[in-house]
Length: 426
Ligand code: CMC
Image (cartoon, rainbow, N blue to C red; front, top):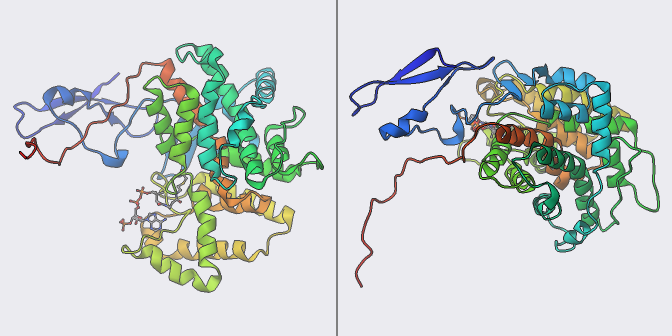
């Protein structure tokens, strides 16, 4: 596998260490440092800035060039020609489905959207004003208690059933969280509706009044799910892999991914963008807040800007911006003052030397929050939408790991605490 080698000289070791270097299909070579432990050495890489934690065939990102490929297909082409469920199939199976395979997959997902009636009782244990992500972590984890028939993680068919159940039930649970928050009855999913249409139906219809879902909004919703479907080894996906490496069941693993996604540096950013826009208030305050974002002594950051990997632009943001324009035009919201301010903020930041020199561009969350707000999704639910979209990616990575050789994830550390010392004598 490795024709190339790297040589590492370490003070205190007699000989230079020869380390294998592996080439991926595209992207940087990786140096295999696994033999270091036998020499009593560890590598040090907090935040995994230079560390490949696994081998994967699912998603490739070239952050410098702004490229995102799922199973080789550019995200822009998938956004234009595919839909969320087809992209989910692609992530899970490695190839685009034939029409017959797609119909079967869509049918299977559609017929798994309903949740066990008993699960509805779980919601009552939460305060009505609980944060939707808190409820999602609880109810998705609780799914483990309902599917004893398919929890053998070493059985590929069981893993497939879990994947179908999770992708199918996430929008149902997301809508239930919202309905519980606002005190309306839960809406059952409808098998005659598409995935994203069904989600908007469960969100905004009531048993008293069932309106047709606006197809422009359903398409925008589907695009949001699709654009979030996977993003290689990000914090939540790595969390799912790490939890999965212990042999934990798929529902517990996805619940751990949801928990990791919640933070404002990751999926919580779409919610944080809207809160930031509220805080800025109006256009006259933009300069003040940009100065705060640039001040190292001020914790304020421009939410929806910057990315660990993308340093030129986020290709998802480009598609999202187009969808944003379509949704605002459909709803006649082009003149909404907050949205206008967001666009002005974006323009000023993009021309500012601080942001330019650091490669800080709007990321997917800058526009997704604006679209979701326009659709009528409450801010607190934004990260739940991200979690719903990311579920096929999480489950594809979990499945890829389990289908191949893996070991429990167990990082080491640079210990800088006390060496051994004795408990004081009394
Ligand atoms: N506002 C102001 N300054 C920033 C920002 C920002 N949003 N992001 C990065 N910087 C500065 C940072 O202070 C640092 O400056 P310096 O080199 O002078 O110390 C430099 O840019 C590099 O930033 P970093 O924190 O070292 O970069 P990172 O890769 O560790 O962090 C990030 C990436 C996404 C956590 C960060 O850019 C950020 O906090 N952005 C805002 C939150 C956000 O929008 N997150 C959503 C990411 S996209 C969705 C997802 O994939 O989860």
